[in-house]
Length: 288
Ligand code: PEP
Ligand code: MN
Image (cartoon, rainbow, N blue to C red; front, top):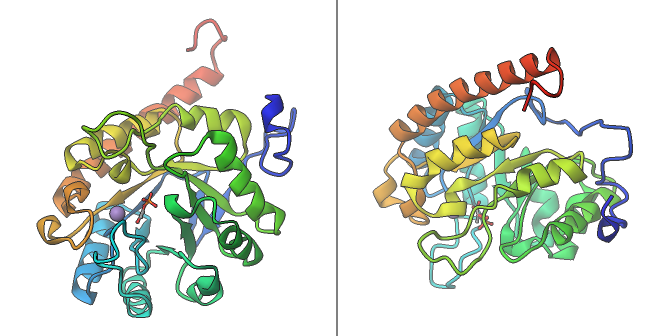
């Protein structure tokens, strides 16, 4: 292994032991099934969240996302509904059966947010909030750890190591774009991190092309590219009326666009599986 990664005792793939972590959430096995987490950037109202949840479920998503605590650049922007938002997510879960992924931004909130979340999200801005990582490591809930916008792979994996070192093995990594000199897109989605992560760690990795690009027109192509690169799933922002979203409206997919993406994802995923099957039956020279 790369010597700079030598302190990653728990997150590293070990020698010949190629076992990969599978994080089970409800009946979804992240690391084995194709996971599609979809839903609004922010929980805004019961109607908005429940209808969006029903639409993404109908289209084939297997988990629901939605922020009740929003880490916003400006203190004057919508900060999320807090507890009320979590109760709305609970309702949406009851209506659809979809497990809930929601962000926690304060270490003091971790234990009680766990009562509402099936997966705790630690956002890009908090990737290196070490007290938050330790608290998340102490609870049994799976953690979705987003890559910080200015973070290297080594820094990111060290943050996952913090969670595992506290006794929680259920970590899902999420690439969401990094800051570069490019300004056309909100961030630069670093898809080369997907096979890099798979070379170094046994943890599953998903990709968030919504924050990764900031532009709804780029979300579908980058979702397909993420799966082709080997990601275990994607996380997509969907809003029942994108133009009215209180946060991140430029990157929100409508339910119709999302349903179309789901169809294409399933075609691609079965082609990838078929290719993997064929490869097992061919010599290395024949396969690519
Ligand atoms: C989010 O997924 O709601 C979010 C705030 O994303 P990020 O932390 O990647 O900016
Ligand atoms: Mn968002």
